[in-house]
Image (cartoon, rainbow, N blue to C red; front, side, top):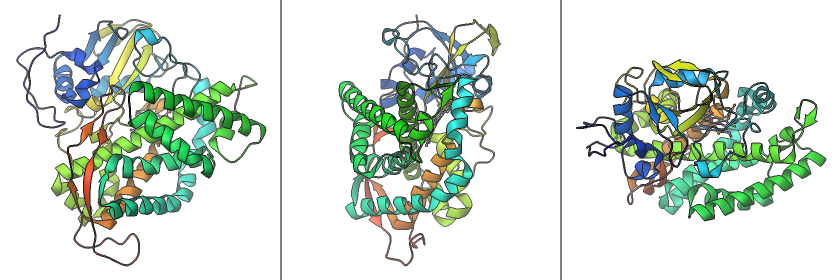
Length: 428
Ligand code: HEM
């Protein structure tokens, strides 16, 4: 029986003192990510029980991994640690994930390799270079509108916008349908009750089903058409498999970038010296800054794998068939791997964080995500002279992704200047 305990911590810092064992079960309660400080619990686990067994309850039993070393080992060894039965904790009552063994994220080789090869070209550097100009133009427009409004919710009005537009482009969603997709995605991922979220999600799946059918009959130059033409062992993917893969891309491509960008903005507000550094030397710092923002925000909270054989991890025996849960934000604050892990340092190098995963399932959209983040950051620093909090930021209460639900800001425009992209003096 575990006992709850009190602790004092500064925001997102792991520095804490526990009189006794903390209630580690709080990690599977979304409330911990809204009101608590999971970083303090993870720090205790890293230092005391880095491979810890969670008894079954609402969720099946699983091993909790909190150190960089074991998490990286698991993510890299896809033969021993399988993705095919699901990569997220699901309440026992919900049964198997419908995407199991069918989507890119939820499959093992050789099926995973086939799907990955099919979509990877869309995320290759050459294609992203072609995209970068239009992406910069869209980021400019999004930030311009936000600046004109003055008082905004940064999450909905800035951070959510570019990722959804980009995914719509990749999936070849016609312009006329985009407002509906944006509205359903907002409802499905950002707003409302669980019931409202699942209705919106069903609308998205219905839409993809129709689109996949059309693209199979009449292919275009987009990822839905690519997926609709994939053959596994000679057979085309079923329409349902195409739909689940599209959904995977939509969720992966929108939620995490939105959370990384809004978390990055909050971090810049909390660390004015880092904000000043980026303002002063944007081009020189932006690459390391983006990685530090990803490490710091670590929006994908956990990833599940299932052991395919008996294996020893961090000295503990894991039996074939057992689940392991990798807590990515914890790995990214592991002092054994990152000097001063609770310091937000935009010049941090090296910075081999695990926010985008590792190994064969390493985020296929990693470079795209960084491109989007850089485009929005560039515009913010170009178009604003000041930013202030305009209300209390609200955190999500999810065990799957962590970050901000809303971030009310008051934006002050930069003094008028010439060409777009030239930063005004004054600075964000
Ligand atoms: C800040 C932004 C992002 C973060 C933090 C993030 C995080 C991750 C992580 C941790 C994984 C590994 C999952 C695993 O090992 O099971 C992953 C995989 C994936 N991500 Fe991302 N992601 C981001 C952006 C994107 C974007 C922009 C897209 C696409 C438009 C995308 C699509 C995917 C897909 C399809 C996979 C599965 C890859 C595979 O299994 O081979 N992600 N992402």
